[in-house]
Image (cartoon, rainbow, N blue to C red; front, top):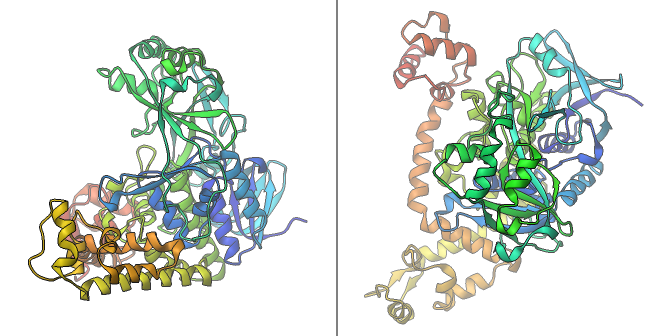
Length: 625
């Protein structure tokens, strides 16, 4: 029976899944429409979650009550904490997952979420009346009414795939493109553009000579994505492998550049700078005769391997010929070649921070339609859009995250304030307060927020509070406990470290770079007793969190002061206060950008490219500040 819904989500990728799950859990009657129910939460590119800055986003999604971290932990076949040689501000979790199991787990969750329904079809038109969305129309001719709609169409809007000179319409390999929505929204005044991304060749693991490759094992410690202690993978853990291209392989690739859609004019759209295709690498880095490639398993039992670093849209013959010049891949068998895909996106400066569009009320965009790339960036947007769609239905205040609260806040603020001129990917360098946005404390930062919006249940909240109390107990103990020289000097002498001349607080010992809490537990019985009382499943996590807070306390406190000063501008409302056309005291460029983006606050205005500090001073003066 066809009925009206509170929230309709178009597309069941990573953004759509989080959006639909969040809205339904909060109580909205939600419909998720997908072209293929067997491809829910499909990993279109590599079978991995997390990575630099992306891992932080996943931990934030988990802390807020989203599902990506839990489902990743259930389907992990290798886990690694990246950047451990650097400071904890940039430590980033990453997991290889079983692609099919990941998708199946998401489908299981969605099918068993109350208030959530699924319809297999393609949406080709939105129902819009008086600049307000009221539903959708599908390819099958069905009209669904809705109070809010979230568009999470990924790469499907007029998607076009390229392998050499061959072109195929589709949102990803073997799946049809979606038509109609872009054209309708452009007619309604939306600005759109085309972007390009790509994916590597898939190869048969049985055809690889692993004796010519370097093995890369995963970590086997307490780290994982979800902060829930009982979520883990029961799948067999598998290694990855490293190989390198060489001069012979590059010659094969160069000889085929004339057939590359990137270089023969076939592709006009913008691709990601940070994740270039192999043909772009050999052109951009012409002096290099070698590039690193990672052979990554697609699942627990499959022979299918993903060749990370070999993204390409060259003819399949060129891809195969180049790979056969690599010693480990002399006899390689392909499952399918890599391909590039072009798709429509919408300028994200057309959105509010809630991800609602400025032109059509109750219509939200999330994921790659906003010019981003990556499962994690999409999922973070999806969660925010899902929460806000529900809150619009029930008349609650909008939900947003600030730049000093979460990477998700940085991501959305960058999109709606600065826009994009290439596929946007999150980096730790984009977050000016990254020492405050560490992956280890995402639960302490955001679980209370998730509780407030209604996605965090009692158990998760109590676990967070118990962890916080345990961390505080260790820090308080360290501040007050006095360590006698005879307890630690023998160890310090053996290791060539400065000995104590008089008793010092344990806190000061932990501050030393060469010492950690685990080592000091072996030397100080009272500390060992305190730590021994921690819940075993979370013991190491709590010790690490306490140690980071102690060792980096000076940096953290300083950054909190800086963030507090910067946030003052975000508390000064600007929208609707000034007539930008008559603002002759600032440059023409500033007037144009202020009018186009119409920032909510002075803080947002200050982050618009082209707005100078002197422009902000003028605005503050005009506001009487």
